[in-house]
Image 1 (tube, rainbow, N blue to C red):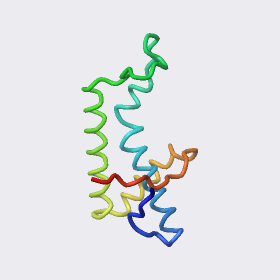
Image 2: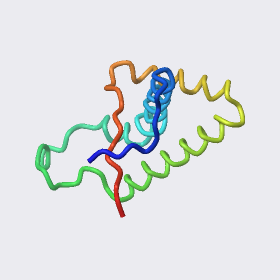
Image 3: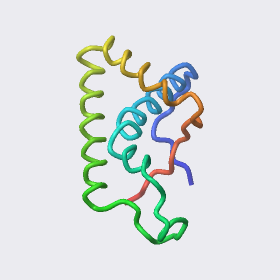
Image 4: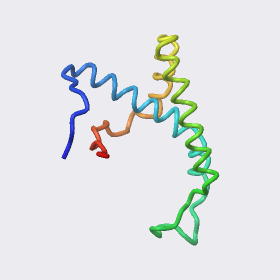
Length: 110
């Protein structure tokens, strides 16, 4: 069941939020430690075997720390320097031209 978190009737606003979401993910995840892991060669032992971790706990911690720090900086920038924030979003969009449009995920219930 999909739950509407908020109603976004304005299509222009939805497009802007989608644009920001994709750019922020590119800036916070794609261009961080996960890219270093992705750039490596596939593991010949565990490749395509479900259930085997390809990321260590330390790597995951680094990925998440980087993402939180980048999101934190971007969200602060959005309110403190909107022009610089927009410049960062445009930079992030360089990586997202062929990405799928976002969809609303199902809300987790307690």
